[in-house]
Image (cartoon, rainbow, N blue to C red; front, side, top):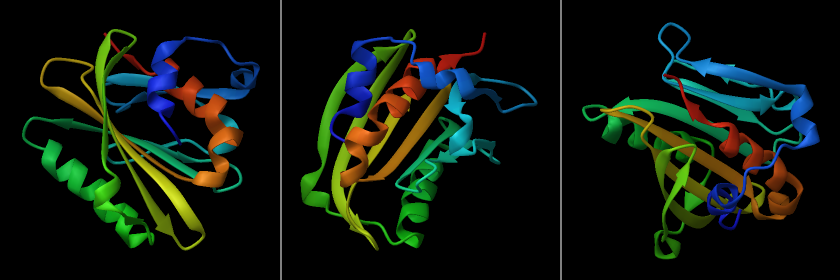
Length: 165
């Protein structure tokens, strides 16, 4: 998904498909952030954040909350999850997409190409800070064929991501 996170930061647009979206504040017991995810993606709260999968299973999207002490483990867990699901990242394709800002939060993005059991994929990790000492780790894994099909949904989700004050 070429520069999805950067595209999302370049414009804030309300998409009609978000009429059927679920806004989740997470973690539910002491919210740090919120995001609107289309109902068709089956969004759910996880132990460390939220995750969702497109209805055609072509894209996996998650956000995990970390702090300075747990951020390395959260990133390691995200990579382990991808590996357990058959994703092979080509380290030589790593690109630092630079910094941008989403709803007042600085965002850094790393991107790779790789493969999974179905073929070529894009993998992205984004890092945002919703509050002092907190980090949101966004994981994107999607087939390269699904880029155009899900770009508006992903952009809409990223644009809806806000810190809960």
